[in-house]
Length: 460
Image 1 (cartoon, one colour):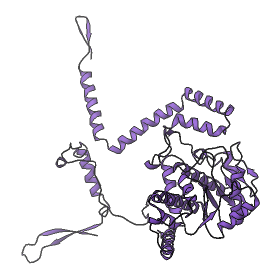
Image 2: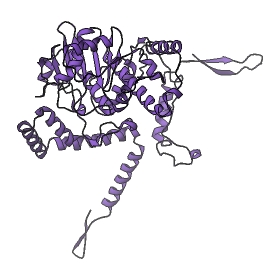
Image 3: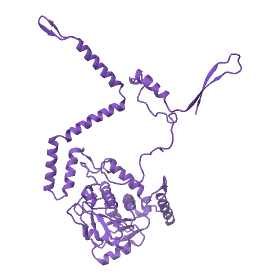
């Protein structure tokens, strides 16, 4: 209550004492509050700030201005540019490949999501084609992140179906790190565009000629990867070709060779190309050019391309010592090692049989998804192990792995939550009501004139 002294109002100190007591209670409750509750409150505060930004009129005005400007300008699809600029506002600027340090070739940039088939675009494709588009676009990103792409050149084609002979290829004019699921172009065996995708670009008909010739002659091949990295180009110019110097080279099996005859646009050249590849080989070295890796699946073609490039890197580094100074295994050893490598790939893992390259490709998709690429890949093997819900577990079977409360022995400060009366009472209640099964009996002693009752506990 305020008092009057010499005509001056003076506040009573009762209010200050009550305020201090209230602050002390708040501090005590804050100390006793569990860590998970504190984390939930912190996240709630962050969500409130995000909600405030999203609901602000300034943010909406700036977002509408960006989308309107993107719809009016630029040769690229408006939806893609608008999505990129929205991501620049909402997402941090990160490297396009931050998980594997040896592959971090690009500077800070905004990640363009691979799975961008949304809304009306999703109704234009079947579910299987949507998944296939995302997987092919993910393969383009892997080639770029490994540093194997050369601008807008080189191509990867995938057969969509066997009935209509339709294929997916990248639009000629986009870099590999720009390729998404919706930007891929669907063509027929003759190179005629069936679906242009979400871009205004066409295809490289001269580059597609190589792919169409192989797809037409080899119906068993679904995916073709055509690259010419410096190491592969160097090995393709050697008369000895790719030597069996490493396991990567032995994994590729029998390799075909095709002499360089310029751009593949003539029918006789395409016929020679198909004859050089043969009916069963999956890898072909193009002399003074590059290589072609084929596969019955996208994962198999990726695996062959990965091994060919690694094998060429090994040979280029070993070549300065002299080809005659290199040790080469015998033909029998080469065949035996190749059979062992192929057998290891096809082994079953946890009741799942993996084909060539599938296990490695799924690992790479997990890396891309963790980096924010949003591949849209459907995983066969879940990363997190789930416990059997039908099994019954007792608390005594699974002891705690760690505790947030410290001890004086640790040399640190003891958490006040550990010895608070309310916490001790809660632990006692939890222990008394725990689902541990036991049998408590009172039995009398034997062999004495005055037996006493003894309590015996039998754990079930």
